[in-house]
Image (cartoon, rainbow, N blue to C red; front, top):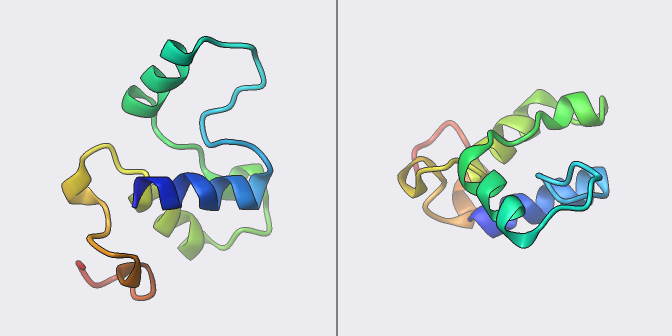
Length: 81
């Protein structure tokens, strides 16, 4: 599910979720994935609906148990699947 969130973020913004535009080492990028909150897609692209940003945030949740259990869960994000 995390990878799906990264792909969604890239498709909507044209860059990886934790891409700052600066040249960084692989270690810095991995650290950002594990410690930094995902960006707000609505702030990066104002045409992204708040509901889609909520799905994105949940897909990139740090704890696996906070993410959707299956891709089907993204269809009805209010349900805990």
